[in-house]
Image (tube, rainbow, N blue to C red; front, side, top):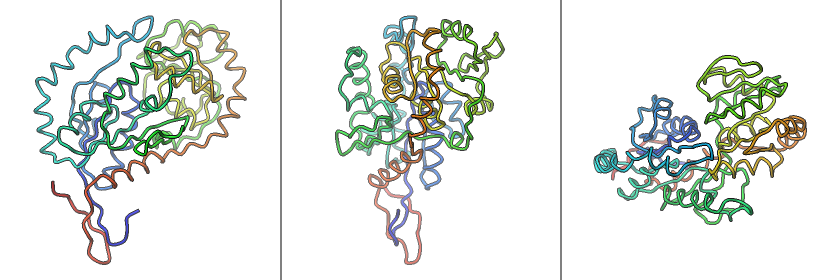
Length: 369
């Protein structure tokens, strides 16, 4: 809330969005209109075809980023390094030009949604940086007992590198542990407004969302007397009790009316499932600690179950316990606007001080650098 007699300072904000997966992209679809509605000028940076297409209305500057690659055993470091071999040459050729273009934008503040070039540019231009992601939770927790030490430390190292030196850390968390520093702000994850408008019901089908091909899982689904609506496989059609659909307007309808969700354990879809009170069976991508961490939350909270090696018996046991999961979900109160409120407060804290307004009203002023 602005004090009476103070003007709202319009800022130039650079917002870097990770294009690996779509969680940060969906978040940006909410955050950018929010910031622009507050009078700020926002320049978006992102990478990857899907991210650039999804954020096209904001005319993003396309940069280069790191994509993760998997093989049968799980996350492959060798394949990831090999497939991202253009990352460093791109910035050797274009890094200085990009920083110069950002300087011409005269930014007051940078926000990184797990995007490393934005972090680097903020430090080069000596502007405040706000980090906003769920991955930083890993940097403020001990390694879970029995977890893979290498995968855990790799995830923490990557997170610290990508978001190093931020003035503030907005950390989306389901567990809501106590923060380990005054600059760390644990918040409930943002929920898209189109999800908030849905009227959930328990229909006859199970929604399945897979970010990578999983033929073994499809075979298991076909052995169970349920109807499964599958997204993320880039195909449409029907194969016995499995209905393949491509992303579109029908996805929200299928999400709202499903009786449960089966899918990889990305943070955003789990957040949507909690908000809509949908039990979740997680199939985490192997050797990716963040996915395993999210899956463990489902089990420990009683909101769902998970398995890296799925079977008919495990899924049928999950379906048999749906009433119990729904009972736990009914007790969860997730505030979908908490992240927005926190971001606005921190932007006001680190942005240029507003100029005094004439008596009797507010003015909008552009700060000088």
